[in-house]
Amino acid sequence: MQRHTISVLVNDQPGVLTRVATLFGQRGFNIDSITVGGTEEQGLSRMIITTGGDDRQINQLMKQLHKLIDVISVTNLSENPFVSRELALIKVTASPSQLAELNGIVEPFRAAIVDVGPSSLIVQVTGDTEKIDALLVLLQSYGVIELTRTGSVAMARSIVPATAAATV
Image 1 (tube, rainbow, N blue to C red):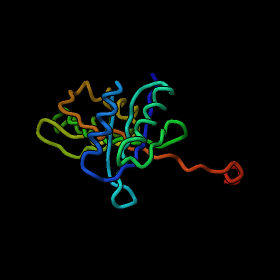
Image 2 (image 1 turned 90 degrees about the vertical axis):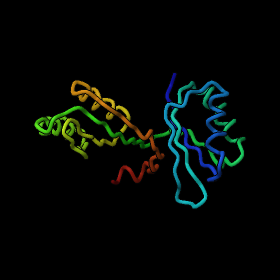
Image 3 (image 1 turned 180 degrees about the vertical axis):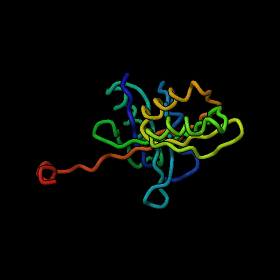
Image 4 (image 1 turned 180 degrees about the horizontal axis):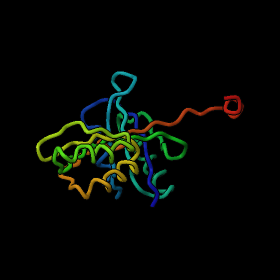
């Protein structure tokens, strides 16, 4: 099963998220990640949804999403190059004496320790899902107390004409 990232532009109205999520459930799709936020245009919100399925299933799902009230456009970002990022906050068991050691682990990930307590600390990391998963593996030995992730936000990459790319 392939992982797909779908962008859904919707009117910012009550009930839209429920209708979209219900459609996924009724069609047997699991939502791996969903983020919703405002856009450059007032009154519109963008949903970024990651889910699994083959191309035929995803195309059918996209057609059904188009039919929903308040859905303006649906784009399968996975069909072309796109940028995807996620934010995670990870609370890890650690004493203040382990701060330097943990800094050495999180620094290569461009992560930061954003809170230090007597028996734990919180690491903030942004990046693609694989980067966050890799950091989590390294932090498991310290004891992950709590984890919260935003889910993916994504945007299609700008398309550069071949002639312009050759001159850059």
